[in-house]
View 1 (tube, rainbow, N blue to C red):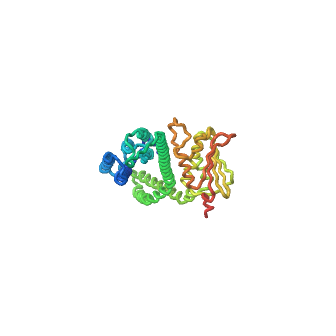
View 2 (view 1 turned 90 degrees about the horizontal axis):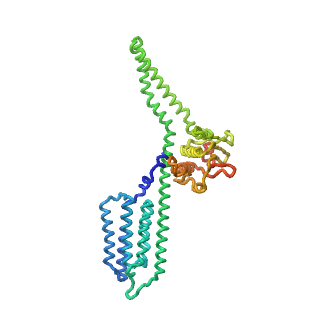
View 3 (view 1 turned 120 degrees about the vertical axis):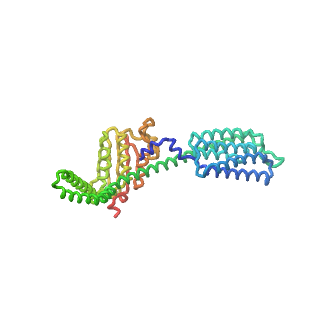
Length: 436
């Protein structure tokens, strides 16, 4: 299941970033109301000279487009990145045109040029957002050359030096660039985390489903027991009645023997469920680790399981699908990158339970070591198309941390090559004897 998520194309993952049209429409109505209120206050209350008709025409154009979108598409419609770029680009040009006829960069509302750009970077793929910031930078570069003065008191002129306007340009450009890329980064990390957590839940559900198959087998044995008993009784009656008929004697004997065989199989399934239920639900730490390690022994890598503490008094833990999958993933990762040998060391005392997984591979590179366990971080090379996107360690880390574990990723040190992962729990969290 995790492999399916890791192999998902980038285009499919980005489809989840489509902006909902209703969100954009509401923001645009807010812009229409704000722009209208500002024009009315400046023209009617402050009575500053203002090209009212041109301003109203630009605001009306925005309102007409917004009204068309509202009646043309349902509220739940999500627009693709190209349409979002076009709509946000229209908003940007409308706002810049309004600023151009009302003073340009001298207008205190010039900073609002940043808004469409930030929305684009927060909600759209980067390649559809970059053109918008280029257009925005071009617009604010043109604004200082407007021939229209800032609306102000009659007989008074505001003379802003060119050097000051350049400072305003720098302030808006830097604010827009920083805020846009910050919004993009936060949005991207949030989306990756949500996708990775979804993959974690899918993996956990699959592991729980597998652990419940013994219950399904017992239920099937119980349901099939009655019809097989009826078949067996009928077969006995037929055998007694037809024992002297050579045409049917062998067929009836075969029918009876096969029905008895089916009943014996179902009886063993029922016995396994009844007698082995406690073994399936609870198992010693050593048995759990041997079960996890056994699945990875046949890959040409020597796999050592070292128990530093005696088995007497060892923790007995509930069979936790998430914990077993997480440890299995870490062992699998070590086997994948080991040259010859992987060592799994199990330690426990009255306070802690610690499992250390070491391999003799190349170890973690310094940049990966700082971000290990984050979603979509992997030490596989990009040209390794068979590799995943780094969800495996994230899923393992998340599932183990849910069980109360603390994970430490490091390299083995100057005397030994390879990577080391330590997984440590307070004993009281996983030992069923301690919780009684």
